[in-house]
Image (tube, rainbow, N blue to C red; front, side, top):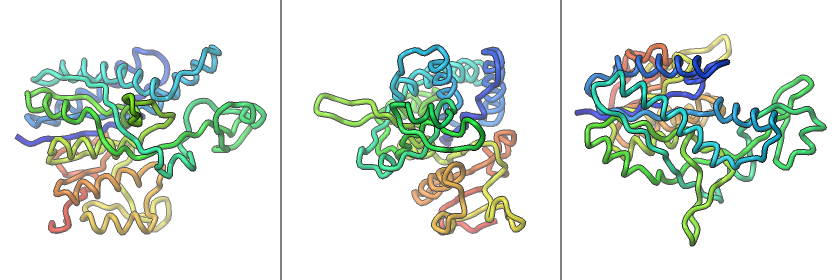
Length: 303
């Protein structure tokens, strides 16, 4: 029986307004996944960017004490993971486990020297200057500043063995939410880190740990492109890992969106698997390898 790891972007699980709208969005996503996976053993990871942003907005509006980012990641892992678990369990012919997932990061990661990941509310310049955390000008207008934090790559998924055990028992697993709870190892155990972990690489590490056959990133674009956003824009339908690496080195993909996904796909394909980046609205075709951008080992021929 094949093993499939599917990453669902946080924006695909976001909904404006009420909890009922969020509930409906997650239910629709879970239903689409269940219809597409068949009998494959399934792991689902998910983003949480909009959800963490909403919590930070609420804390700012209510003037409540700040909670560390590792705590906010854990909270949104639990809330979103629980919703996905509930709706996948109802739609699949097997039980579903939701697992709070921890990841190790290296404090020497270069990402800590130059934080770039925007989170939370927008600020005017005078407000930004008073904040106890680093802010940067991200947009335009009267409130162009946002908090920025490091987005390091994970070095280890601490709960990967538990995911594998659950998967081997026949359960589907929801895990790795928001890239995992960021921790560093200490003499006494672990400390939380003020960071947002690269969720695409966490997903790739999970896929490798459970010996997945395929890794699928579902996002809000149909596939990866060369010369994206120009008159010469060209879709990439199928590419080997070596060529994908050359595109990455040439700067073909935006670091804020497609580059981490293609980097994770290339690494997974180099280990012998097949990876796909596709639109979540084409989930069935994407899971069958018939839509999106397929990244495969170098010894396979491109279509």
